[in-house]
Length: 60
Image 1 (cartoon, rainbow, N blue to C red):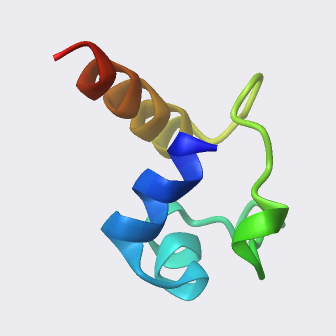
Image 2: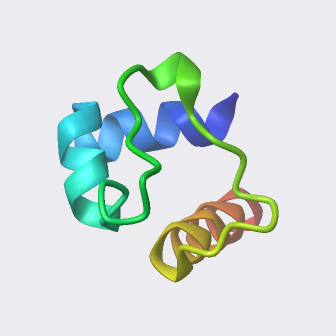
């Protein structure tokens, strides 16, 4: 999945990803890149916004 690849390049580790989006607060910690939750219907606004940013990069 290209979104996961984008996140890996941007955040390097799942710990950095969890911290950046407050995923621990939402009980959505990601412990492995393969366990990335779907952004469809996410209640985490920051995570959803990052996906929108990723989508915009695809059309640039």
